[in-house]
Image (cartoon, rainbow, N blue to C red; front, side, top):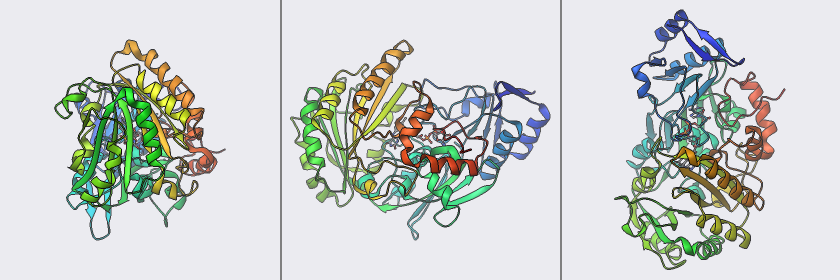
Length: 477
Ligand SMILES: Cc1cc2nc3c(=O)[nH]c(=O)nc-3n(C[C@H](O)[C@H](O)[C@H](O)COP(=O)(O)OP(=O)(O)OC[C@H]3O[C@@H](n4cnc5c(N)ncnc54)[C@H](O)[C@@H]3O)c2cc1C
């Protein structure tokens, strides 16, 4: 049976039987067509706004399959999407009618304790990494939800629970293997293809399919000092002001966030906050447990808490604490982010007001404390260019009813506009939905002064822009 697949040139192109048979014969993993029962096994994406309906799926078992899939897409002129963990809020790993490379089966993780490295395949989730690294009391800096994919997060930056001590995820990448648009398997490291290595640390999936990524690992866990102080949402301004003051002199060992939302009754949450709007100050200490609990004590005294669950916890439990509230295909999501130089009075006023007028219960307004090791890296040392901010604010519109789409999206856009007006000008592309503006505008903001260098590297490795389902960088002409 032949299939019609979205074409790079516009419209669709017929992929005939013979071509599909050839692909099936070479690929060791799966080749899946619309209507095949195996389609149900393709990794679902997070955002319910973009379930996707691909015209052709290849689910590689390894790098050789990725090479075949990339060659096939290029030779047939197909629009191709690459899915790592599937957590793209903007729906960039979803596709309707095009070809999907679903890396879900490439989720191996190998920790080399002698070298202090974790080798991670391109379809692994952070939970896969945490499981293997924590066996050795080690951590590879990731995100704050264990169901998020490693590759998309790392290629776009990566802000997790240890960033102020160890930097962004991309700062801990020491090499990667990338299948570029010409079907070549390239190493990217400080010594081999250094331009490609520079570009994939912040430039996203623009340069090819990362089949494996190698990260530095650091000692932490299995038990870590954890702070989880939940304050009433009505105290948002007070808490944010105290948080901003505290953050000015906070040690790099402490990484925190301060977020406002409402969560449903759930056995993983204390009953005091079930269906109750709250501001949570969450923190992890990179160091001794007792020392960490003491150092984070001030975070628990910003106001009278509704409940305080601060305690030593397994790092794996901290990593997966948010997971139940971000199940795949549960929520519709529209997120926007901005960076702030400081927690000014103006910022406190906007964030607190917006935190209390969220358009849906599940909408989050979250402040990430940046600085520390993140800002020790020069703005042009990696493609990730925002290295000056003290905070990142993410306005995460989450809801379930499609009838609410325009209401929540408009609210997030308005809140973001207010905050961006006092921000550094940058955005975090991994926390950026693209529905409302040309992707180029967001990519300009996200990559800042590094964009023209990235466009030249894009022209070298992907001159026809085969990889365009991403925060797309147009090849320099
Ligand atoms: C619930 C939730 C929590 C989050 N928490 C955090 C957080 O704590 N910190 C943080 O920094 N970010 C966080 N994010 C944002 C996250 O970094 C991005 O959504 C990221 O893109 C997810 O990576 P993924 O592999 O799951 O994405 P996918 O949806 O699979 O892909 C996203 C983009 O990356 C590309 N891509 C994916 N894999 C590869 C690959 N192997 N090779 C080349 N390109 C690839 C895709 O083509 C696409 O353009 C969160 C997102 C969600 C939904």
